[in-house]
Image (cartoon, rainbow, N blue to C red; front, side, top):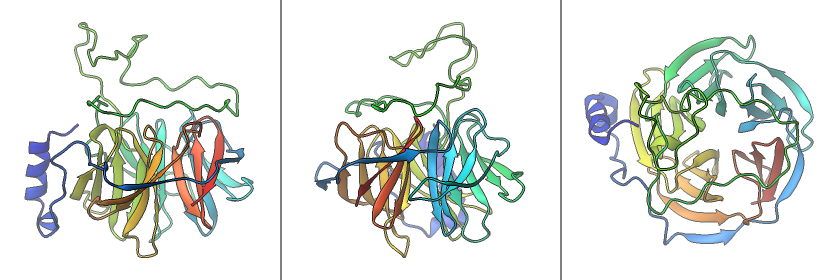
Length: 306
């Protein structure tokens, strides 16, 4: 994770950032203790996703795009109601994808590639990469007092288990150490992971980086950070626009098992929707015709009425 002092220096040096309001990023967790909360509607499991490890969604006039984080990182376009496959392709330069955004200015696709900590810009007509960029704030996950415990899916995997891609944070056969230590024979720090969600509004990409517990607003042409703010939880995941002007989003947190109504410009949170404890784990999430469609990373799409 980028140190706050270094990041503030970067922001101060960027002319475009000087005119924007300062974000409330002094704390590593946004306080939502007084935010009004309501329960979600009943959870419905609707269909299998095209591949076994869905980890990001986007919605366009063509249909629902599903980003898979399996070995081939399939990008699939499906019919939202039925899950019927329309078309799909494999991108390049992507490892363990998480998050997908179709750019409404030119139809290109932005993909969060977690294991190499890149944002990859893809041409969906050819499947070729246009460019690849570093992810601000990427690095190692860390624990913080009061964190929600990690959640695992209660659903049986929709497909046979696949061999996961090797994690750069776990070289060889070393197990993850719960207390944050690493083996003493490591000579280099593990490289960590990257983003989990990308939204686009004009020239800005809003990129959610769980390692930093932060949303970064990046100018997609200069790749300069324009703004940033902290998230309420330790596992922020996908987001979906909540209003036609694109000022508010429903922002998910997989461990807190909920959605927060969040101002995309300031990070202000005004409402929380809490899913039941028995629900699948939120990975991708997009609002469609009054339903919140979500994918769990074991191969299922589920939804609830918003």
